[in-house]
Every structure is written in structure tokens, then in C-alpha cells.
Image 1 (cartoon, rainbow, N blue to C red):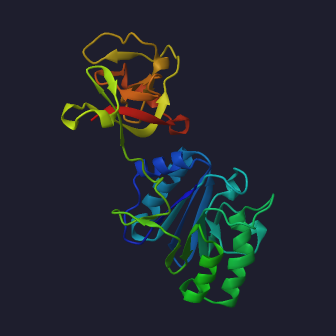
Image 2: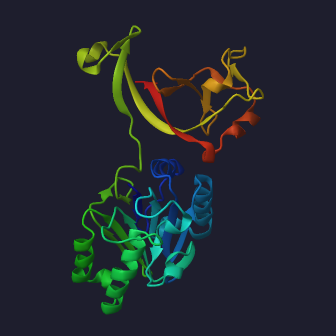
Image 3: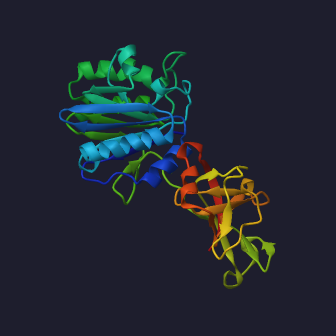
Length: 304
């Protein structure tokens, strides 16, 4: 399922780490829309995280996104293939040509999360066709339909089980469906905007014991979290050393790295990685091997 992040004006943008999590949980493309200067600006079709994150950071420097309403959409393909033009948000239009545009301005922008049954074909996703056949005629019949309760109810009733955001050129931000209001002030369509650590099994004195079979005071808790890591591979040029001296005795194929340069080792018996304190890449220059486009959203096993 896709995720929508609807940010009101005056609320800070999600952090880069939050956007990375949303991307890796919903990796089939992303887009952004924001209201400024009497128009909704839409940029979408980003199929690599580095391109999307770079665009958002450039917009933040140019526009100051914290001050204006912004909607982010990260897609998992359902109806329609994995291609840039199927990314959200979409402009409010009846034109197939315009609704496919990757960069445009509109009076109203729309992002959707879910499946609208009975819509979509080989050329248009369900959301695209629904906008063209239902919302656009509604907007012609009811000016400022996004401020009209009865008009909005027609959308609610025909998209049950879905989540939708409408952003108007005046800055109206309308959510349809059960969004999660978070402490950061942003409304999310589901919980894939973060990955909270979860307690799992327990190891004590090297023995594996289930969590419900050991008193808490005797437990050595471990938990799983996730973050983007890049495999170092078998490159001979990459060397790992102990911070107290001496080269690590394992080849780089067992190792991963995060954006900070922290080194992790992969343990297949746990199907997870562990941060290796006391180990590092041999040179600072080698930290450049981290490439977000090559990263894998990896489970990390930690001591609690």
C-alpha cells in the first residue's frame, strides 16, 4: 500500500530519514505537490530515492516548504504499471495528456492511497481515470467543491477503503479517509512512514530463549529495527580495520555500511545485520561507497 504524508502550512517537513523509510516501504516511485503563488505545483515520477530526495532538498532551499502546505506520495504499484507517469500526485483535469505530465501546475492536486474498484485500464491507473471521470465533472458542477460538504461526501462514498488528499491553489488541505495525525503535525495515510523497533527473541548466556519464558530481570533483550544499508561486496579495495589497530579478518562480502560510515556485519543465521562497534572502513574516502540508490532496507539486530 502507498503512503501519503499531508503537511499543513507552518509544520516542518519530514526528515530525510523519514522520507527514506517511506521510500523503502513504498519503492515504486514518488512525487510532491505544494501550494504557492496561487497554484498547486506538482513534481513526480522520481524512480530513484537519490533523485527525489535531492529535489525535495532543492525545493526546501528555494521555496521553504516548512511555511506552505505540502503533500508527499510514495507508491506501491497496484492498478497500473511501475512507471513515472503513474506516480502521484495528479492535477485535476479531464485530459489524458495533462494527467500524465511529470511536472505541471494546477488549481487542485490530488494524491490517493488504495484501490478504486471499477476504474483503470491498460493506459490509465484507477486514480487517473477516477479523477478524469468523477472528480473533474464534479469540480465543473460545484465550484470550490473541496469546500462543499455534500460534494466531498460523494467522493467519500465512492472511494471507501481509500485515503485521498486534495490540495487547492488557495492552500486548502483536505484529507479523505482515516489519516494518522502524528506529533510532528503531519497526517499520514498509514504507518509505513516509520519503522519502530520491535522486541523479538532473547539471548542470555549464549542460549536462545523465547521472550515469554524468561523473567524480565534475567533477560538480555534484543530487538529489530530497520535502516538503509549498502553491501560492501567483494571489492578488494575496501578494507575494514579495528579501531584499536589490525585489519578485520573477514572479507567485505560479510559487511554493510550506513550513510554515517557505521559498519555492520551480516549474520545469515539471524537474517539480520549487527552494528560492529570497534570496526570501521580503513579510510574516510571509502565512506563514499554508500549510495542510497543501492541501499537495501535491512533488519538490524540490536542489544537493548
